[in-house]
Amino acid sequence: MAKQLEDRFRRRFYYLRLSVTDVCNFKCTYCLPDGYQPSGRKNSSFLSLPEIERVVRAFVECGTSKVRITGGEPSLRKDFTDIIHTVASTPGVEKVAVTTNGYRMANHVERWLQAGLTHINVSVDSLDPRMFHQITGQNRFNDVMAGIERALEIGGCQVKVNAVLMKGLNGQELPQFLHWVKDRPVQLRFIELMQTGEMDELFSQHHIAGTDIRAQLLRNGWVPKVRERTDGPAQVFVHPDYCGSVGLIMPYEKGFCQDCNRLRVSALGKLHLCLFGEQGVELRDLMQQDDQQDQLIERISRALDNKAETHFLHDGNTGITPHLASIGG
Image 1 (spheres, rainbow, N blue to C red):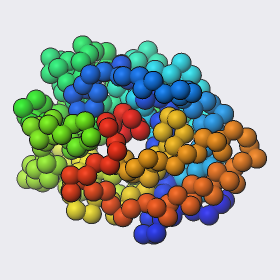
Image 2: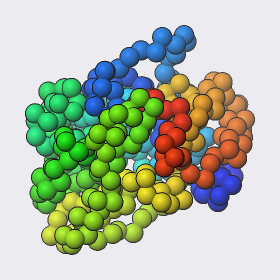
Image 3: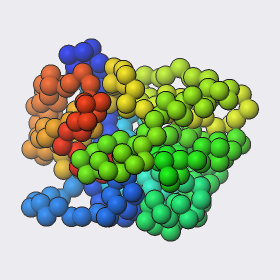
């Protein structure tokens, strides 16, 4: 194995978030309120299967054991099942996850699991079909929920449900979400609304602090769970009376970045050291041939010298990220 990926702050990176498209068919209020807008870039085809195989192999050779396939909406790719199989077949990959809006799950999740998927995160911002429609721009609540129930029925994978609670919209739905996981082995993940370049006004109107949600959980008997090495940034809470659990992603809390263990590669082949970073590091030119692996690993390793100790969200600096779909959230 090549040298473990490690930055100047002794953080090690076991977790790769790999975007395979920035296209999405939903119009979520906090991400793509006007829907997907093609950029007009020339030569902007998304990563091919051989390129995906090579970049995943490079990360795994440096100690990465968890790969999350993201978008946009990754299941929009016609070769999505093949992508899962390619990632899962890479020796050293222990967890293969996907983040999806869930609209294709009911019909396809069995094939995804057979291809090697082990973890599924589904975005469900409301359990009220009308509010779901208002936030996502799509009247697909029943389809998405059917997909989740199908995944639970099949079993063999961990299911998480992502929700961004927003003041004036779905901000009062915490009790409904908790009731929903009382008898389901699902982890709810409440993601604090984050300020991005195109969302300043939305943030100021709708932001709910993750610390407020945590305080409610603690008052009601939820207790923290110990983190595992390849876990994402969520603080996870469990309750003896609930089958499900709750994860909180709170990027505005002090120390959020100190345990960072993940790197991102965009659908166009750029390495991003932070969701709120700068231009990214071009990797795609070194994904074309198998004999470029050593060079690819070296470029990734060198780039880590420039990874900052923290993001600068507290200062109102969101970097150049225009919206969360642009590099896979």
